[in-house]
Length: 634
Image (cartoon, rainbow, N blue to C red; front, side):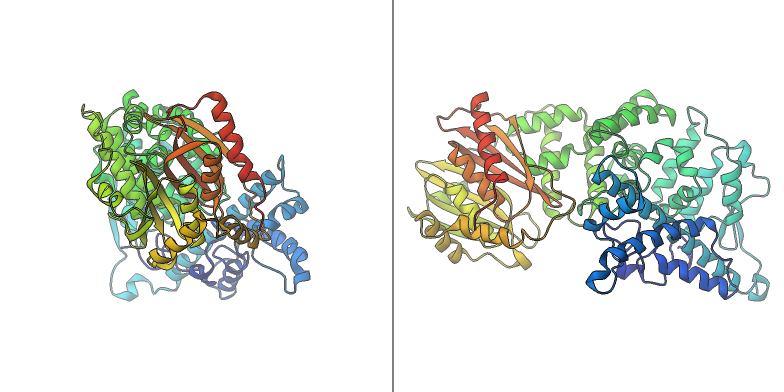
């Protein structure tokens, strides 16, 4: 078990990191109170004043000055509001970056440079606090001879020992002649839950030569062993990073180090996200037949975010060079590249495509290639999502990904994808219930608590899906997926929704509002526009990307994929535009990514054609972009 005061289980900073979070990883950090902030440097000085630690050196004072400069400019800009702010809000970052001279080709580039500098400063200060507190606690502890025992000294691995609660080098260890020793020390520290002693760390950082190219097998195996230690590996990798060893082992790491991800979907900087994903993957290694490739892919899957362009192909190209260099045989290196290239495949398809469409399953099977890669991708998806943030993984998404994996495994086993019946017995029963409009609500099957199914049956009518999605939005129901089917003049709409506070949707009120909307007695568009207008005065940071429409082809439909900023009634407005453009929506799937949505529609032309012509696609794109780029009228 980690010992109190060790960096592997750090003592909370004196400002209370649990309350304010960490400067290094927050989009809008409190520069004074958060862990790694100015208060922590004051605490380091207090330890020095108490003669239990050395005063902070230049390694701490330089990042301290970075935070002071940013806070000073922040106070200058916010002092007119009363007391100067300590929280570095996103809307202030570009102006502060300009005032302090941070480089960048545009506003976003300069803001990112500022955020990266703040993150690096916070990490350095937090690490200095952890290590200084551990050394101070060790100094204040009575010597072992006065505690009635000799100092603990036991072997932890080749040339690595524990000495009185720290990982040290054995007496005859030779860092200069053994490039793998740094990884053996790190692995031993993570497995034992102990910090690396300062003398061992200094020798390793000073004397370790570059790793040969390719790495020896024991070097790669020891890196995997370090990652397999799970959560304790986070602090050890941070220690290696702080003394420059991580970049020496993997030079590509410099491109993602402290790189911010400026959206609320991601909790961490790119490099910390990769480390977190690897530690999450350590808990999943028994599910796959190549744990080593899972751990390496988890550590490297987003390495392309440090390079220009789309991070997925960029990352695959980078990893194509890393694999052979760390000593992977060609077949394993190819699997690692595939995992990086396809690491978004399962979550994107599961949340944006119709899994009942055989073409969807066949495409995934073709992209994955083998059952081994499918199993590794499944585990990588879970680890990546868990490390991303609290909204990136939940039972609902896990169920969709698991369903996709099961169906794809059937195809990779040589069987055709299972064909769903045109209508299930339940759907036929729902369609047979009466001739009027009916609205039914129930807990969604095989979903998490708070996820509900709303079913609407009615006579076929133009705009029924748009009206239904609008009424659901009016009732503050977050739509996850909606499907529309019609048989013998009757329409069936099934929507999976998340209700506010987990409360069950009120079917009676939903039916009344839907009837009023279809009869033209409820100004649905106006009410939704007023809600959007109420939030329009609050500017979103960073600025949203413009809406985007893409087309794809399924077996029996054209797929229209719309990327847009989230907002009240966005799905309703898109569905109205599609109806006005004269296409029938068979299925609508909604995915929310932070402040953006990706809405996917399986459509057919009004004449029944499954493939929209180029001219029809242009008309559909213009109609959708028209409603998304125009300001809704309250």
